[in-house]
Length: 325
Ligand code: ACO
Image 1 (cartoon, rainbow, N blue to C red):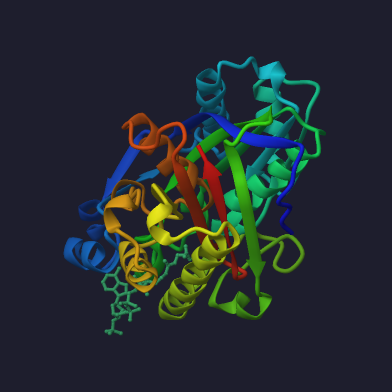
Image 2 (tube, rainbow, N blue to C red):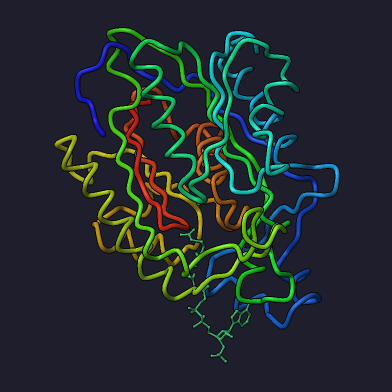
């Protein structure tokens, strides 16, 4: 799965983000389900989330985030050879929403597809783009995470509807030769035995409808802490690094208590963790690029920093990406 010697490096040259206009606070949710602002903040760290309106879709949010990333990378749309959209909430069953984004960006010559690894989708997509770049096949790739989880939430289930939000983030990966910057490692894992702890109870080949998200919260919590901690340690071992060598941890933003438990387990300094869950909630595959965008905009992540991304989600699937920024 990993390759230490490579011809080309995949360097992040641009980051972008796009959020729906509507902010929904915890107080707003108390009018919808039997919950309280205190319960949500104490158990999750979430204070508000963005919810897409009817004219905001996974592809429209993804395209906006991609435009920002391209602008930051100082590239033209037509410089892009590949688009991977990580999403579990595509506009339609097919065509791939990545091709809808391709069309709205006016790109004719590139290949585009959706990556489905739920909350881990962004790190799975980075690995695929990195592989295409390091073999010399692709020069510039757009890797997007975009989700509209609000459309698959059961708004009568207080155990899940308070946890998620909508949004999109994107990065441009560009091929560099002989650089010590770029993606240093990817480590990906899946274990389908736990599919029934977090799933959507519908789909084209089973119920023929979209279905709603279902979750065993405590079961997911336990596995999340274990798998995220082990994938961080795996990345550190592989790169011969200690936890204190990492400048920034950019985790999938599911729940502040998961992040705190992982930090305690692997000896992570909490000041080095980029946290956006309070304002975005869990945006699944979009959460890492949204957090990256904030951290870059705020001047936290800088050229040369060692940045470790990690995610865990339905499947289960989990993984990490280590980047010399
Ligand atoms: N408001 C008020 N009370 C609630 C709510 C709510 N929104 N939701 C559940 N409760 C109640 C339950 O009904 C239960 O009541 P009871 O004791 O009378 O039966 C009580 O709160 C405790 O419920 P638990 O499920 O035990 O609460 P817990 O402390 O485990 O917190 C939570 C629930 C926040 C979902 C937690 O388990 C969690 O964070 N799990 C991880 C899930 C996650 O992050 N999933 C995202 C996808 S995977 C990923 O991205 C890593």
